[in-house]
Length: 632
Ligand code: BES
Ligand code: ZN
Image 1 (cartoon, rainbow, N blue to C red):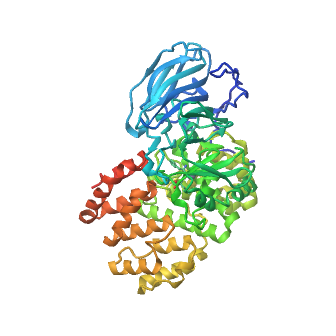
Image 2 (cartoon, rainbow, N blue to C red):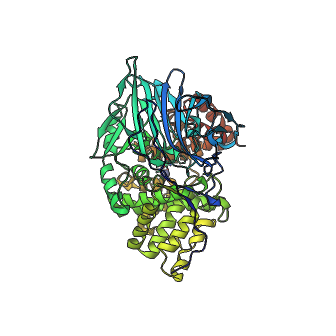
């Protein structure tokens, strides 16, 4: 037996808790599951104020009203608390919440105190409640109109143009701007919610809807949701708007605004098949339903893995399912991230890297090896590009970091995925898949750290000292750069495209085959064209390849980026239209960045456009663009 190199994480297990009554005095039907917390030093989350070893929240029951006119949500949050007698201080995370009262479940006031607000990084302020023996706490509160987790859209920002729309984004630490709880990925909680909204809007959440909405007779309806599996609170999510649903398979379906639904439905038509493929790879899908909502284009991300209700940008819709790696990715999080969760955000690769690997396996199973290898090759190029920019020894290029996401997706996502791919190549798929499935099974509904991942591989996968050496596990996880044993992508994946790139660089030959290429091939081509191109050359590329008219936003983005980098004025109106329509940070931030880098030419354009679009962006996107446009 091979010996462990480092200590074993300690799980603080818990006894069953007492039955709680709900607000009508009715006992809650099922006893919710209580998940353990980790107590090792590397599992300490410095982005939370919570002291979960002393008192922790195990269940959250929200009763909230959505006020679209005031852009506010408010009501009560009932928290069930687990604490030893004598540990009477409950510390919660809040950011900007107006707390009017804290009571026990029969309405007796509890003493509370809001500590100092930390602006940096959005940590917010601790809310400390003196429990005095109470284990069911009710917080009466309102979230402010500028709560960062919430985006309130005007009717003009929707496809229908008629109704307001609301969505939330919790990851990483935004949910404390609308829910007062212990907002740490290592502190799992079951939850339920009653949400009221004006007719005719529908509400969806990242929990299972309970029955039909109740008509309250005052122009409003109440919607109920339950998540009976403990989840980290960043996974609590809500959306409300004029939305319809269409079923895909027996447990899969999609929500979208009525006018978007047909295109959305056509794009995600492979989802049931993806769930089946994912289950064949790594075991049962444990969340019941897998539904998605395609949001308005202001949504700041491509997708967000909210349990039972993945949130998606509409910008992935291309008409040919070519950007469906996104769906595979968010689905894969149902195992990596939602079942087994990084205990701290510095170990994000445990969520995103494992998911990106898993995503590629789903793509391979559903769309074939060629597409999977091409997508892997794009990821590899992304790693190379970032490493050549920041250097192989930049500390932020280790998988396990104490920092955030400054390097985009190259490290946590792509290097993380190539780590797993490398290990897979060394031990073979059969052993690797069995190992990864046991990792998910044995840590289901629990937090994990890089050290635990390493220990688990040493214990349950590595068969000999020689194999351990070949894997370079600690280098992969804890050292910067790319280890020498990386399983490179097939050089053949893009052989034809790379030849076309060279031909273009040498003699400006535009590949006749382009229109027949896969989206990944087209992206590879556009991404590798010479950095400097003349207006004539850009005009010719646009005309021959139909770039301005592409229906694929990933390709449109690459075209606009390339055009603006070369100060190509004819592309400015299209860029302006795109930046006014789309709020996805991955597209918006770099385009403003490129304009900003173009000094005298680009900065006035960037400022003119941003003056018009800033208010329409989500706080996440806005913060990113603000940063870009503050640079010298
Ligand atoms: N969980 C992420 C989104 C996220 C990351 C939100 C960090 C907040 C902080 C999600 O699963 C994701 O990775 N989305 C990607 C798409 C994916 C295909 C790479 C995105 O939004 O672009
Ligand atoms: Zn992800």
